[in-house]
Length: 261
Image (cartoon, rainbow, N blue to C red):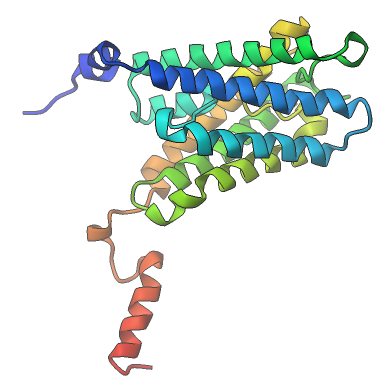
């Protein structure tokens, strides 16, 4: 009789294996995100538009997912990792190591950005902060929704029973990031990612309402992951019925072959 294997869920066996490549990929991914993404925020002080910032973060994520997704899954975000933990897609120890790697990469990326930016142009180095008149609880709600939309998109394109979407995963995830920035930059700075906010905060020394950028995306992401797993996930091909939306095209073609209207 099968039961819950604590050691398997904890990931003790997995730790004994070589997972350093995945951790390096997560460090590199967050390094690139904080370096390129926050660089566009620094440039904002010189007249860069919100659209440029949104596209920069979206394109950075697209490049990261395309380049290291096959190594670590390109979580590059504690909110995504926590959602994967909540749904049992990764082990506990691996999830913790991923989050540590993400934070290290983000801090290193922001530090590198500071080193290459003249003092007079640094500003707050892209640190996420609440907009004028935005209360912390409102900021939490906004970051909750940003984490929610990102993770539900990630789960959708990574669904094993929807192979048709995998080829577009980097683009779709990047566009989801751009969506979040286009909608919410003036509200919270559109973090969507606790590690990204941590990296900027550590290097700039600005910690205003920092809890918002951890609890919001993580709780939103976990809710999205659980919702997708138990309600929205695609059914295996062998269990789909004739009413399944993904079957309509095949059924229509079959009607044509049978000479039916």
